[in-house]
Amino acid sequence: MAARHEPVPRRADLRNLAIVAHVDHGKTTLVDALLKQSRVFAAHEQVGELIMDSNDLEREKGITILAKTTSIRYKGVKLNIIDTPGHADFGGEVERVLGMADGCLLLVDAVEGPMPQTRVVLRQALALGLRPIIVVNKIDRANAQPAETVELTHDLLLDLATDASQLDAPVVYTDGRQGTATMDLSRAGSTLEPLLDTILSHVPPPPADPSAPFQMLVSNLDHDNYSGRLALGRINKGILRVGQQVVVCTADGVGPRQRINTVLTVEALQRVPVDEVAAGEIVYITGLADVAIGDTVADADDPVVLPRPEVGEPTLRMQFSVNQSPLSGREAALSSTSRQLRARLERELLTNVALRVADGPTADIFEVSGRGELHLAILIETMRREGYEFEVSRPAVITREIDGHRHEPVEECIIDCEAEAVGAIAETLGSRGGQMQSMRTDAAGRARLIHHAPTRALIGLRSQILTLTRGTGVMSTRLLGWERWRSLPPTTRNGVLTASQPGTAVAYGLLGLQERGQPFIGPGTVVYEGMVVGLNRRPGDLHLNVTKQKQKTNIRSSTEDATVRLVPPRTMSLEESLDFIEDDELVEVTPKGIRMRKRVLNADERNKIRKRAGHTGSTVTSST
Ligand SMILES: Nc1nc2c(ncn2[C@@H]2O[C@H](COP(=O)(O)OP(=O)(O)OP(=O)(O)O)[C@@H](O)[C@H]2O)c(=O)[nH]1
Ligand SMILES: [Mg+2]
Image (tube, rainbow, N blue to C red; front, side, top):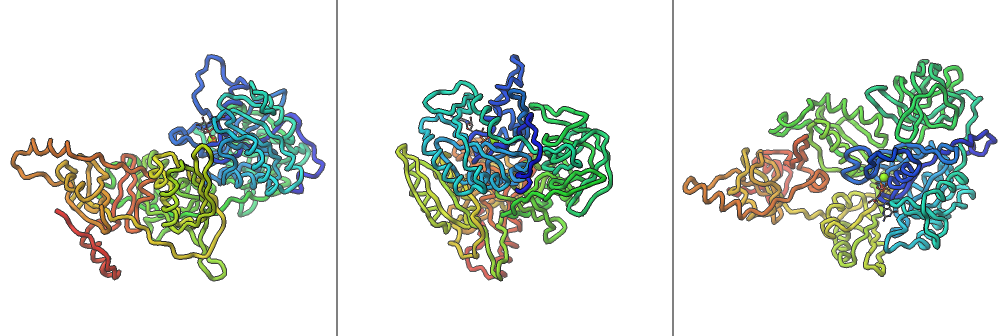
C-alpha cells in the first residue's frame, strides 16, 4: 500500500487494531479481559461471560458472528480494538473491517497451533499492510506447545508477508481467561500490560492528515432505533464536524450533498456523540441517506473516492421460498409473502456483505448465496426468530465456467479427533471422494487428518463428524480454489419415512414407524402428507400413517402400552436438517418449528414423476 509509505502525519494518541484468529482461539475472551482490566466496569457491576459476543445467537452458539469495535485507554493512548469472527463462513465480516486497522493481534491457540483460518486472516491482514503481533494464547492448557506454535506461526509469516517490516513480529504469551500476558514464558504474567505495551510500541499510529479534505470509507453499517442508520468507518483524511456538507460516493457515482447529523466515537461499550473528530479515529455517522458498505463519504467540495474493499465470492447457494406447506400461515408471527421475504432479504444485503440474493425460477423463490452452510443457517435462524416462515432447499455449490469447463470450489478439510475415531473418519471422507493429504497422531492421543475435497463433498460432513466422534471432533475448512468438476461417489443416505395422512401422530402409529426405521417425531406432533417423519432403515422412501389409532377395543391399555415402547425421536436441528435433505425435499422453517418435507407432497404424484424421469430404483411404497 503506497499510501502507508508517504510521510503523512500520524496521530500518536491513537492506535487502531484488529484481533484475528481461527475460530475459538480466544479473541473475544481476550478483548473482554482487556475491557475488564481497563476498568470499564464499575466494581459493583456484574460482568457476564463474553460481553463482546452480545447477540443471542452468538451467545447460544459460543461463536462471534459480527465484527465489533470497542476501545480502551492505556497510558494516555486510545486503542480502538476490532474483534472479528474466526469461523470461515463469516470471512466477509473480517474482510470489510481490516481496512480500519494499522496492526493486528494474530492469536494462535498454544495447543492447536496455526489452523486453516489463521492462514486466511493473516494473509488478508498482511495484504492490507497491517503489522502483526503474534499472541500465543491459552498457554495455561495442559498440552500447550508454545515453542512449536511460535515456530509454525513464524513459518506462516515468512510465507505470507508482503513487506519485510511485517516479519519482525513480537511474540506475546497470554492466558486470555485469566487476563495475563508475558513476554517470557519462564516468568508468569499477572496482567495484560505486557500485551498493551507491545501494542503501543508496535502498532503504528494511524496516518492522519487533518488539513486534507475529509474522506472516510464505510466499513460497516448498523442500525439503532434512536439514530436510524449508522455508518462506521475510519476517517482517512481531514476533519469531520457536525453540520458539515458531505457527499456519498457509491458504486454508481457521487450522490447529492448531505449534512452530517451526528458523529459518535466508540468509548468502551458506548457510542458517544462528539462535535468534531480528526483523521485516524473510528467513528459512526448518522443521518446519511443511501449509504452502503464500501462507499466513500467525502468532502462535498472536493470528493476523492477510496477503493472499495474486496469481499470474497460465495461458495454455496440455497433457495428460499414462500412457505407452501399445509401448515403455512399457522405459526408465523410476520406475514411472509414473496414481497415480504424479498424485502427482508434485501435488507440483509445492506450489512451482510458476503451474501448474494437473486430471483429464482418463480416469483416465490429466491436464490440466496453465502460463504458456507453456517453463514446461511444463521440467516435462516435469525429470520425465523424475527417471526418469518419460509422453506429452504438443500445447499448446492456455486460453480464457475472457466475456459469452457465447469469448475467447482475445492477445500482443505482438517479434522482433529481422538485417535480411535480416525478409521471411521478416513472411511467417511474416502466414501465422499476426499483425498487424504496427511494424518498424524500426537502423544496425547489426538489425531489430525487433512483431506482435499470439493465443497460439494463436504456438505453435511460436519454433523456426521460430530456423530462419529460423539461431539469431540472438530472440523475446519479453507477454500483452496476452483477445480474441474469431477464425478463423486454417490451419496448413500437411506430413504425417508413420510406421513401418508394429515393429523396428529399417535403412539400406535409411531410404533409402526419405528419398526421401519428411526423416528424424527414423537406423539402429539402435527403432521401432513409428505412430511418427513423418520429415516428408513433401507434405501427408498416409504409412507406410513403415523396418525393411525389401534382398533377401538381396549384403547386405553394399548395406548399406554405403546407409549412405553416408543424409542425417543431423533430431533433434527436446522443445520442437521439442511445437511440431511435431498434435492426432492425441503426444510420448512417457522418461528415455532423446523420440519422436513417432500417437495411433492402426494406419494402417487411423486411416483409418477419418478417414473417419468426414468428412475428404475425403488418407488415410494406404502405401509399401512
Ligand atoms: N484454557 C483457556 N481457554 C481459553 C482461553 N481463552 C479463551 N479460552 C476459551 O476458548 C473458548 C473460545 O473463546 P472465544 O473467546 O469465544 O474464542 P473466539 O476466538 O472469540 O471465537 P470466534 O469468535 O467464534 O472465532 C472459550 O471457551 C474460552 O473460554 C485461555 O487463555 N485459556
Ligand atoms: Mg469471538
